[in-house]
Picture 1 (cartoon, one colour):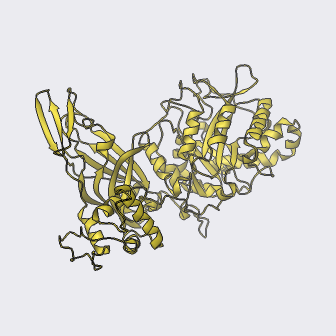
Picture 2: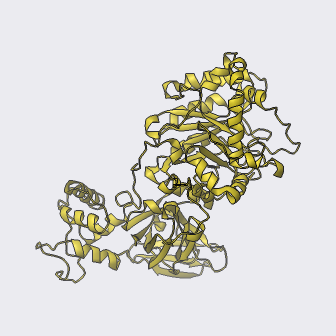
Picture 3: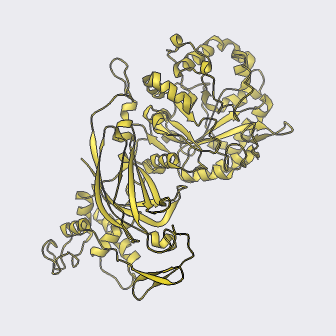
Length: 614
């Protein structure tokens, strides 16, 4: 982007922009009119009819099909044959036609009931009428919670970095509005020890009262999705304050709060059975854990939060040892529980915990294999996940078939950055906890994954992650697989930057030079990147380029798209991005809206693309 002082103006009469250079020279650039590509014209000619009722193909007086009309029946055929949208009725097609005409023309002057070529071209560019992925919930929602990837936040109350930012209910509300279904709250006593605050412990973050967070969750939990919200609590409270939490949650949530009658679950309930319900997940009260395992004193050099603590090498153990330890504890100490829970406040708090949580602690590898008759949630740091997956990847997959696995960022991510989520997803981990208040490529991937299934916050795991073989074998993420299908992506053109940016935003002296980058992010064998040519001095770039991506595990692949503006002297400018789950892509010509760096949808910027699976 140029640094010299500059001015620009738009000339309506000539359809051009004037760029002033050094206050002396005037550069005029013509604005090219956006016209349909050859593929769009061909599709229109294939399905439209002439004004006389015959086929447009080869019958148009001007040879380009512009005199034809696409009525409701023809649009139905186009959606079915070309776009793969079977089941569209003539009535639905007519409503689409009426909406396009209403947007493009004065409704009182235009009474026709079909689309001409320009109308059809604009229809393809309307992302709400022609979206790239299915916009509603369409997956089976009756399986246990462990069968789904769940949109999960980390330290959901922080407004910025992990050390000194404010704690607030605002980021909790924003996360819920975006579709996040798992909210994490760290609970600490206030300065007098009589109430509960939410804050990142042992840091300079300013607290927010728990009651404000709980009321915000109640009021905004189901703004974007009716499916259950899970509150994970990092509990640092005394027993009387735990009882106060139970009282708060019961009073604030009322009938929205779900908890089972039994002390533990043999199988998690299904999202469909928990519509508009709130679930609490945390470890059992500290009294129970203290009676079973003496607490090891923390190291002097602890990281800010007990969960974010990076364990020493000798403290690290694999997933299965945690299962064994917890299973043995529950069996050996079952006779003590009634005595230990004699005080009323203890069972009141414990009863509200639907999903019991824990973390690895201790370790004898030979004792790792254990069969448990109840389900739970385990939390691992991103480093622990890497180590466990390197040595016991199939055991992780096997564990996540029934239980929940939550992965959280390492404690040194003080700037609220995030890690690569694919390693967790490929091993079946349901809760990849992310810092939602930041931005970056990893968070873009998270946004992309949970655009699936109508953005409801629950995405059904692929069947191969849930299957067991005859000898109890499960999916091996490290195994190389043959190509299952090939995704062909054609980038036609882009539009909307002129409406969303000033005309000197990208370059002081000329229109922008846009190009598009595409990435496949998935299992290692599928990762790939491609780039279009640079279109110089044009607000409406037309690339018309096609790329092929062979995929071995398309069910876990994401297509990340990023538009950049080429700058010869500086870093290329950002022009928009999006990320889409490959398994959700709708075939055919589609409008793809772009988002800014923080994941907010741009008002006007979008690409016209085509997706084909072979």
